[in-house]
Length: 215
Image (cartoon, rainbow, N blue to C red):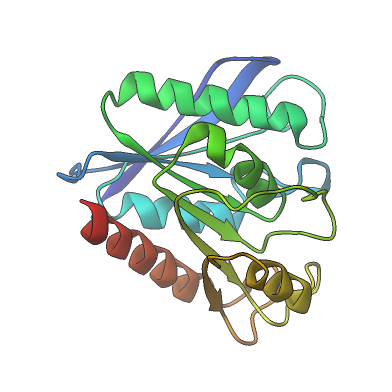
């Protein structure tokens, strides 16, 4: 399916937010939109990161409008880095913008690395029907007291991740009474070099299965 990407800016809690909407040529009969969060703002993370770009466009290929955006302090987004706190406010502003544009649509939420931390902590208050966490950095950020969100949840990472400890993530998700779906992309590193097509296939399968299950 043809996807067009539209870059724009709108007002957020810390000033301007820069965003890109990946818009499919044909909108699915399923009433959903997707919001996708990029990796660490102080280590080159942005909405153009190839992993979150892959995730967003993979979802858009299913006929779902999908947005990726720059957290405060990144690109043309104003404000200062806030260790995931202010970034949750940015995320909520983006969700509100999409809700206003796509009335009566349900939210799909994803994040990669730092973005998976921000999206996971905001998930219960935003109530997406599906949360996708790619390489959640559980030892690099404070997940203390994090409660499993009450929604469909999938976690994806590679067992050769050089930044996020694979065993720590598997131990973490295994500690929940209802563990999320876990996808190990064997041999893949943190940035999924050479594996982005496979990552996109996993994303499309997760979302398609979710949509088929709940309509």
